[in-house]
Amino acid sequence: MKKTALIFFTLLSIFLFSCSGVQQFIDRTVKPPAQCLPSFPDKDGWYGADAAYSIKLDNERTLWLFGDTFATPEEGRTDRIGMDVILGATLAISTCAEEGKFNIKYFIKNKNGKFVSFFGEKEWLWPQDPFLVDNALYIPLLVVEALPKKYAPFNFRVTGHKIALIKDFTGADPRNWHVDYLDITKHIPQEITAWATTTVVYDGYLYFYPLFKSRDITGNILARLKISDLKNRKWDMEFYHQDGKWDKKLDTRRVQVIFSEALSELSVRPRYDNNGWMAIYLSPADGGKRLLRREAPRPEGPWSEGKTLIEKIPEMDEQSPLYDKNTFCYAGKEHVQYSRPRRIVATYVCNSLEEDTETSFLRRNLFLYRPVVVNISY
Image (cartoon, rainbow, N blue to C red):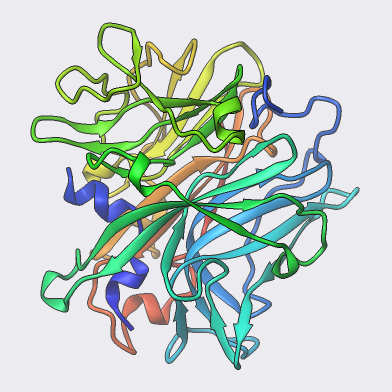
C-alpha cells in the first residue's frame, strides 16, 4: 500500500506552506433531535477514512463523503494489519431517529470481489465539498496521480478537476444512483490546486474558496459562479480581488487572499443566530493542533482573526494517551445540520507520517484515521 494513499489534502497545505438560497442554511422547520450527534463506527466493511464532508439531502438523510478508506469484509477487527485501502472515495448515509439516535450505513462498492472507489473505476478521485442546486447533487472531485516513491511523503499530485452530477438521489442505495461526470479541468486556473475546499450556494451564486499558489502568493482565495451558468454548463467563474471587485480573469498579482493558512479543507457556513458567516478549520502550521473559527458579515469578509475553539486536540497533546510524535491532524469542518445556536458540531481527522508497515501506529490503532466529532460552545 502506498503511504500517500492515507495522506489527504492537508499535505498539499503543508507542502505549499435552491438557486437563490444558501445550500447549507439550516432548515428551521425541520431540525434533528437535540441529542443526535454523528459517530462513525466500524461496520459494513468500513474501518476508517478521512475528509468527512457532509450534506443534508432531505429532511431525513445526510450524505457523508470520505477519502481513501480502510476496508475489509471481516467483522469485529481490532486493528488494520493486512487491511486493504480503497484509493478514492467511499460514502455513507445517516439518519436521526426520533429518540435522537444517530444511525449510519456505509455503502462501499464491490467489483469482482474487491472493494473499489465509489467514483471512477480507473482514476484516483478525492471528494470535496458537495452542494445542491435545483434538487441535483454536485460532488466536486480532485483527480490525483501517484508519483514515484522517491518523492514520499509527497508522492502525489493533483492533475485535474471533475464534478460528479447526480440528478436523482432518492434511491435508498447510493450504489444504484446514476452518476454523470463533468470534466472542468480546463476551466480551473493552473494556480489552483483544490477548487472546492468548501462551497456555499448563496444569492444566485456558487461560492468557493480555492487553495491557490502563485510565485508570490499562497492561500485560499474566493471565487464564484452564477447558478444559471452552472446549470447551463458554462464555467465563467469570477474571482475576488484586492480592490473589492469581481473579475473573470484571475489576476495573480492582485487577487485577494481570504485565508493565508492555505487550507486544503475547511467549512464556510452561515450562522444560525445572526446574519454572519463562520469558517471552521484546523491550523496547518502546527500540524493541526488547534481548531479555529473566523467570522465575517458576508462571504467576501472582512474576516476576523482566527479564534481558538480547541487549544490542543487530544491526538496532538503530549500528555494524552492518544498522542504519537508522528501524528498530524487536518480536515476540520463544521456540519451545520447538527449545530445549534452558540454551539458547533465539527469533525477532524488525524493521520500519521510514520512509514506504513504492517505494525505501524496507524495500522495498530483504530482510533486514528477516522472522523472525530466535537460538540463545542463558542
